[in-house]
Length: 105
Image (cartoon, rainbow, N blue to C red; front, side, top):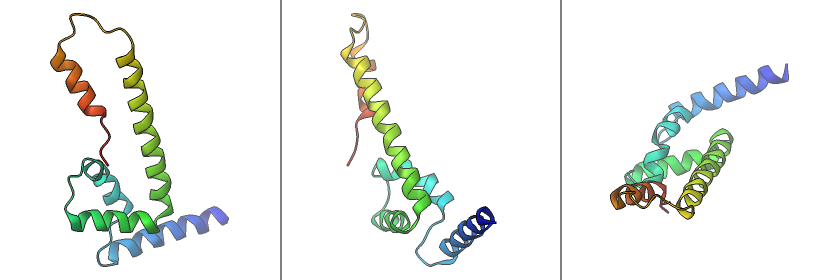
């Protein structure tokens, strides 16, 4: 019974977000999270993304896990970088790898 109520609450909040002006759904949030981190959203889109994040506990949990995954990815690349690299590794390849793990504010 409690699970059914939680599911109804989640469905209702998703519906409310969909019909509330200036709000996005969790699915839309997920589709633009990479653009948010890459700073490819307009000011309006960024505000909408952040507004959703402030009120949605599901996406708050999701973004915490997403951030943790990014940190782990960066750490693994750091370990690779700190290991001895092959002497014949092209500098362009190394720079491309490093660029992909840079964190943007």
